[in-house]
Image 1 (cartoon, rainbow, N blue to C red):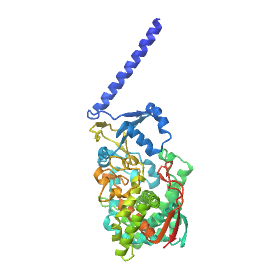
Image 2 (image 1 turned 60 degrees about the vertical axis):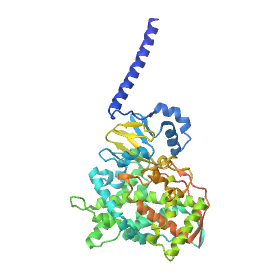
Image 3 (image 1 turned 180 degrees about the vertical axis):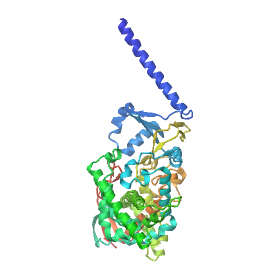
Image 4 (image 1 turned 90 degrees about the horizontal axis):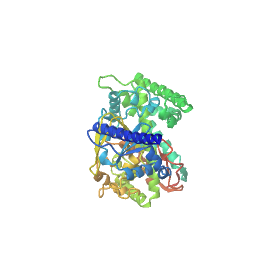
Length: 482
């Protein structure tokens, strides 16, 4: 009897001690975040309870389920790792506008170091990385974008196509966007003499991005070895072009040349290895954004006759004004096509989620007025797949409706500064956004003006098994020249 009583009291005492320790721990955490309460926590036990509801859902549906249950700010806590999700424009300001000393990528993108090199991006300190980002900004200024128009247009002819036929449009776009990149970014040396070699090597770097390489980027798996070998060969190839241009005093109008001519604040120039790493990183980031966005734009237009007709009618009007020629200024007037592309990107963003690391405590305030303190050390996630589909920002967000971006509605503008973040935002806005829209507009302007297209395969699903989600399978289209 005494043993039983002792056991009961021991259990009660253990429970009380556990509760007291939790209260103390929470008070310490609250005190460390300016007195604000912490966000709701989704721990492993909660996830286990929710698993039957979550396991059958895709990524956007999982995030939407958790958003509806826990609100716009909550923390997923597993095995000592804390990931705080910030959902909606009202709580996203610090994520996009915070200083690098307060919130940055930290070491979250270390897996890219073997891909691009230790001399650039996440292989260098923040100060150097910011200077290198300035090189990109200078290379893609609006005043310099016009120079890429004619080279882009030169590639967009679909000259291999017969008078009519059937093609996999997804594959066609992947190859076309690499051709454009080779001409506008890399230069004529690659485009005219070494395109096939470059494309093969670059695919080995792309294929080196997988779940294993993200967490263990340096272990000698077959994919990592192929990636490292391809990287070394690409650096050698690009460095030889840089040396050749310098020795002959030859100057070209491509981005490679702009990076060669870039200088750091202390006056020293970029090295051959830095130029190679910067251009590899640029192509890696831009290729997926543009090829996937071009494919999704096609899938959406060819599945929605109303908006396909609107885009076609706009092209007829603009081509009459410009006497049947696609010109750079004409692209700037293609508002309907721009909205069609933007809506495809809203529904199918290039990256489903953006991540940062909090280096200092900060506070967020929800649209309901609730304030939460976010502790330093947390990984902060901005799920674009949810942010671009907020029902209080976008009417019927599950529907493809480019008119939502038109002057009569402007839902993204009315919704707040970070309502549309397919290209990031704030301090982290993608420098290649205008470049991406330019090449996608050129491609679809040419197709709309010269071909009748019909989608034969079903509307593609998203392949969420890829680290960079993409349209699943092929996109089979029949075409007929006009």
